[in-house]
Length: 143
Image (cartoon, rainbow, N blue to C red; front, top):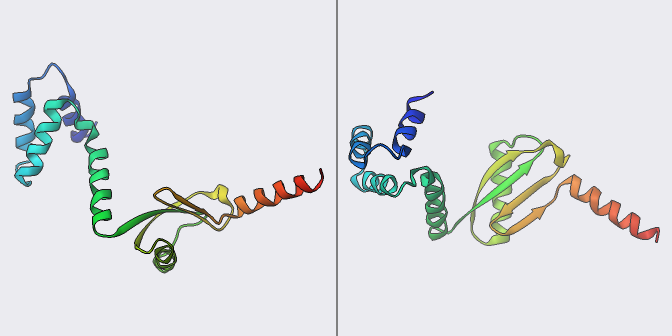
């Protein structure tokens, strides 16, 4: 068990006093910004430190939106190189009229092409989707 997991277990232990938890955090977070450590103390006092990852992710989303940046989750069958990420970023940026940062992931089941999700928008240019569309149209012809 790593030290971080041990620390998290201690901080989530309801039988340990807040003062003891605060002392542990102060020791561990001595070098960080006081606002960040106060925020960690607040999360511990409310018993929701485990939600800090979700909170951080949401904060980054809001910061990106403020800066005019959209994050696109792009799924491809093979890993993308930097040039490919840049090209996809440029094309998606033109569609949403904002700067787009690509978070790439690999999923072999799409066969080829790519799937991009930007917020609520889904762009499915996968071979798998095209085959499904062709299948539905061929089934419809036979009726």
